[in-house]
Amino acid sequence: MEIITSSQNQHVKLARSLSQKKYRLETGLFLAEGINLIRDIPPYAKVRSLFYTPARKDEAEELLNKFGAQGETEGFCVTESVMDQLSDTVTPYGIAAVLEMPDVGFRMPEGNALLLDGVADPGNMGTIVRTAAACGFSDIYALDCVDAYAPKVIRATLGGIFSVRVHEIDFETALTLARSESSVVLDMDGENLLEFPPAPPVLLVLGSEAHGVREEIRKAARNIRSLPMKNGMESLNVAVAAAVAMYRVL
Image (cartoon, rainbow, N blue to C red):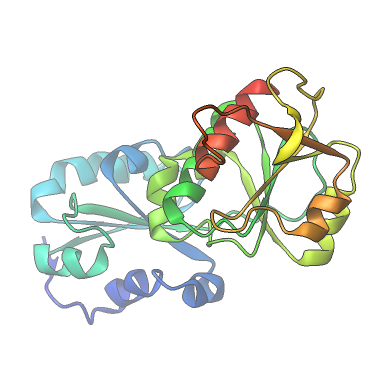
């Protein structure tokens, strides 16, 4: 079994480059780490390559057999030091996969959906994607948000990225979506969402951690709802607010 010992190996260099959005866009590829996430990769996802350390050889062979039924997947055994450089985590598990980004194409909402305005934290974005998948919100429209295919976001989705379509949109498209009859902005000035939930399908609109939904989009939306809070609290973490709202309008 050949073991790759250099981070300058062409396959390793490609995988390492996927930490940057520029190269994800150029190649149409992204990197996924974590054994549970990789084990849960669905049959329709296209796995280009699998990297693993010698200690993970048996697990990697099982995965390669699984992915072999989906198409061509190359396996590369690498040293621990190479995996450390390839990985985005502090203590890598020892298995990482390079996958093709799905060609989702743009479409208007066909059911419950999310419009995210400026969500910047990878953990929040990943949690929102994961919860959207759990709630059946199939489309997520992202305006000026962290890239949904960044490694930290992918890890936080725990596989949810494979069950939703993430559309990066511009401001004019966001306004068009916000003007739809189904749009509901989460804002403290709105009616109580728990008491007055809108009838689905809905387009839930949530804003950035620091600034919320920008005023132009808020004004364009047809409905405004709030989440009740006690003890002087004025806001919730955006991922928590998204989860509460999604489950309420199912």
